[in-house]
Length: 276
Image (tube, rainbow, N blue to C red):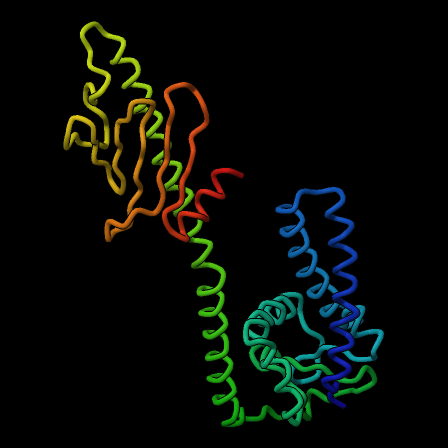
């Protein structure tokens, strides 16, 4: 009566193939950002409309001969089907543990079936809603929920550590590099302008510079880096919070490009990004 894990898996694969085809078609006519948004809406409407229709099944489910019902065997409403779709997010972020628990459940329910109070049954199965008695949830559901949430938290932590945090640090370094280049360009241009004035000494910093303090005639201390005035240009030493030099930037006065010299592994990544 209740659909097996394998039937549901094959139905999922069929639906996934449909979405891959849709993704390919959309990617030919739309930008990447728009494709993702449109595809998400299409996935929602695809499941919500089909599983709340008289068919009670997506195309994949229809092909393998299964359908979706509520706990009394009735057809889902559109919003109940929508709730079921969004509850799949919990199943997905548990490394699909929430899906495979159906293999150990007497009603073959996944985690999102339990959350959305629904079930997947064989196409020809019929319930008698009037004869149905609501069962109390097994104590195992609490344990399953706890394990699922722990897996979800583990997944989120893994994503943060392996994807989000490195990307955040990379973006932060790029923003910092952009800030330093802006201040370096401003200071070098102002120094060239001031050095053209009568009796000006081009060997020392002339005038005041925003976001930086003069600590010697040839050195400006800025937030996180220092600017050193040299005969042919300006050098910026970018430091860590422990005052170790990450990399140096050199701004030549003869209009050549700014060069970056790494002093650490992080500096190598930053200089490589600047060159590209």
